[in-house]
Image (cartoon, rainbow, N blue to C red):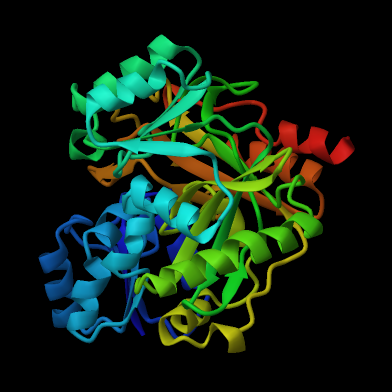
Length: 422
């Protein structure tokens, strides 16, 4: 089989490495891919949003199956365009990808169908939003409606911070059209959990839960990032909570989308907060999370392509989705200065041992050398019988990845260890 994976980050590298375990796959193409992915796939110089070119490439090269990994092309209708040409895809169609593409849609869906989430109001004009903030509980959360590269959420500790966030989004246009509408919602407290789930629109088969580390600095300090590391499973996510989430959140969400005529097929990401009043949805994503994918897929024992095709074909109920009863830890190496200003162009070297379990995100090939080209550069994952061993091994292996100005957090997984001990 010939497979096309749309995207070019660490998530896509993890997907490609997992897919390649299937002996029936003869060739994998990545569009656009990156310098690290080039070792595992043929990279094509087509951007993830160049949908017409992606479809033309898939037709001309007789692609048997396409995996659309990032949010932007899913929300823009890449799956629809591929399927119109008879190319089966992993991922939701445009009308279902709106569950991530519009936070207003997602919140209204949850309110309509009684899915637990934070209390909220939505606003399409700035004056109304600012007026509401005069009496809103503080701290509060301000969210841009549309996609904003994971940066469209502001947790405001003061009323002035909240108002500034609204002005920046609705008047300043810092997120473009994505900020033309905003959601202002209740600030929730409790442990956060990420759960990715395969679904064919009828059956839901969750993957192993995970814990992300969003802040740039140790002890969860500093600016938010795209993720500085992950562990799986998340110790806060017990069997009892998993059962509750399936009954109150996962199945109701899929059923709600069906009732709205927006059947969701692919990977549905549930960002959850385990509040004192039970689990609540913070956000939905319409695709694999990054870097959660880099700890979840290494634990998958079932064949990834078979599971993906089952979501497309509606046969997920007949398909095994089995995960190893082990632990995984991923440590991200970033460019110093990320998530603000940082230098690029430094050569990356890896020991063979490290390279085997490292996913490349922000790198390109230059004069046949792999060099840094982004903020988050690599993610190195270890799998072990215990969380302690997985953390220790992930750090040891990440020592085998080197480039100038490399930065990593030193405490990935420590919060999870404390939770297990308490």
